[in-house]
Image 1 (tube, rainbow, N blue to C red):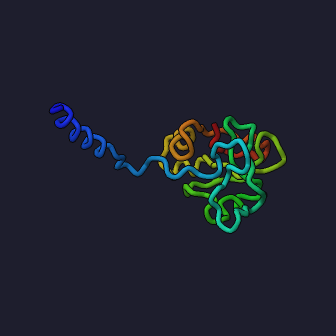
Image 2: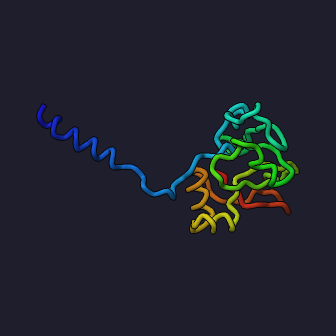
Image 3: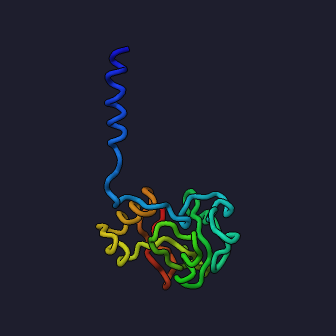
Length: 150
């Protein structure tokens, strides 16, 4: 019994001291890019009934584990609604996998990567979007953009 009395306070001190004092870690996970199996799982906390500019929430099932997003016509329609984007990291409007339909996708374009101080797009996506994400082409043909995807 004495061993537990002696060890327990040190174990608690160790746990309390394990915080991350470094503010360079992942911020809030954005709605766009969140895993999903149905559109109803995407953008759950939008005010005013959850109306997004450009189109209703969608779950892209072509992406492993799904990818929450919505259609758009321009970058300005991404993060246009309060509560849509949580991380402060930009999104771009781009066709996905050679489709003519454009979606809001998490950006990893060179300017964003440089501004965040990351070594490359893969490090940026892993750090700010999801540990399993990398930076890749949206597959949007001539309107191709660099986006964070699994």
